[in-house]
Image (cartoon, each protein chain N blue to C red):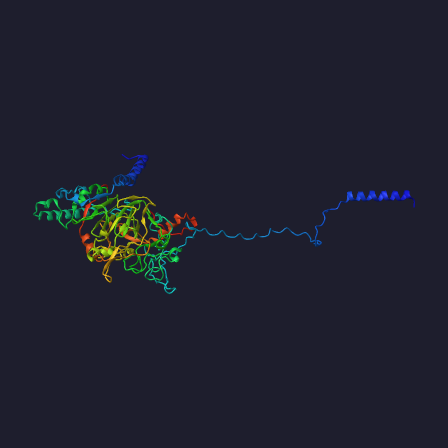
Length: 347
Length: 263
């Protein structure tokens, strides 16, 4: 073979190869990534288009909660449900602390008598029993037990007492709602203030209670066990006759409250400091006059006018628990969904 | 002469206005929401009031009470002013009778020790006059009163158009007398009123013990009243039985009230 013929053949092969590269380029020039060879996927026939796959169901939004200034989630037991737990035995017994207001022919147990009041303390608080929870005389432990200063709230209107109460199933029972303040001051120190729940005036300052007349609705609110005096001496210095009459004013002096009778107040104005004040009494066993302190709490009552016949007015203590729940939700700026569907009095 | 239809229509509108709108407008004008300042009344000042000058003019304009509920405000109890006026006349007559039997020179200017004390009503006329309900106050004896335990001498009287409060402290006992004409809640029917009246005695008083004393509530002249005693001492017998409270109830007098603007 001649050299010229070989050169011509080589030129033809080169041109043909170049043309083939131009006319039939490789579809994928990218190099395979390093690693194991790719698995061949068998060809599948074209399928009919399908509906898009169902999306994963979204997580439901967490229910709104109302948190107080300490970050605790507000919770409350239903109105009319009194504590059933005997802290001495740990046993729950229905009716242990009495039978709560369970509604009547006239008013449902969830009826809100005073929907427009504000919370009666300047800080958070804990409505519950002072008798049947730790520190009470029908319980064990001390009043500063942490369980007393925690949610959920508990109603104690109609709790077993000897006082007449037309709303209670037995005809007698506790006439208000007991409220522990933000902390147990015998341990924590400090002081917690009660405040006006409505615009009005101070209509009475008795030995144990302070009354606020609501000038919008005409209702009256009782605040009991506030610290009434700036200072007091020893009641043991009083004779029995003095102890049983006006002797207290001879050993106590100075107005410990934030108000005087006749003062006009607005919602939220300070009334006085929550305390264990309960006056004096003659201790026959010891033969002397003595303090008779209660637990550190506010006893709160609502006195309202109810008409049995639509024509005549009658004054009554009414259940305060539902009004307090509503006021507390207001205080916490709670989500509207958290408000129970309770019937509210229309003023 | 027969009226044209257009006049009939106009007359019908005018009549409807007269029936519906006018009474409401009159009621709004004639029952103002006055807010008198609280009064502190020193018992010593009461002795200077001449009891022979007690007035009855607040009640002279009384007319028979119209028991027509169609146009009344359902939030206000119907007041039987005629009954209140009769009670007031009787109270004053009894008081003058007591005065006439006293033979000391000061008898005409000093209240009987345990009798009613209309000087209080006379002294507090400015506060009582705006109240559109009979104001009941007890005749107080000549004891030293203070506004609260350890407070200023005297008693406090606070009034509004439809309710009032009087309170004082006397030798270890705090006393409150108050009333309201407002109806904030009503029972669904009369048959169910029994539950609301539970505990009420045949005399109309419901006397209830509470944590610090006693309260009597009752309805009179259509309004709601309460009398409460509260003791500083748990062993004070005045808060342990009903005698002291009932004595206060027995001494209640109609101190005044303003029926103006009511039929």
